[in-house]
Image (cartoon, rainbow, N blue to C red):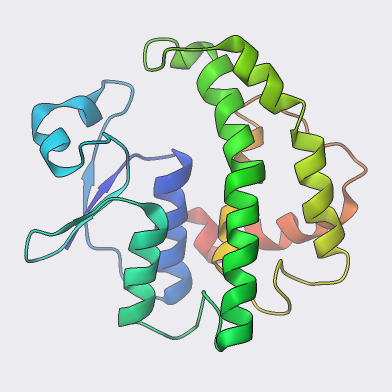
Length: 203
């Protein structure tokens, strides 16, 4: 296998953390420089027409090009520890919360960065109004997460899951997106401190 990786970009980090939480050694890493637009090269576009990272290339040449698809593939090969839930109930809860976070907080933070950060001006057709519209939604997304964490150690209970990885990376990505985390979110701060202390978070 080869992992086409975008460094500190949030989705490549999600996959590397997933590898680490599973205890799976990383495959061969192929760095792709987003700032240099290497993800738009002809060779990479043949592999992933959407020109997004990461991509996991399997030994038979299959290219898996969506973060959760890559994680589900790894979960199937290495079921322990279960990061998508261990039974029908917990799998449904993990799916629900991962989608809520990914389509809520994670997407809004990404929109603020992609459409509002000066470093993205050459990579995106920026719409500043879209950045501001998403910035206004972030507190609502944070309160949903805060309330869930008020009764749980992790997003879906006592065990870390892929939903925590998605949510944790979203919180991390707020800093380069210039979005402060208000002091009010004490449960998020407690939970996030536990995440960043895990060895996997250095992946």
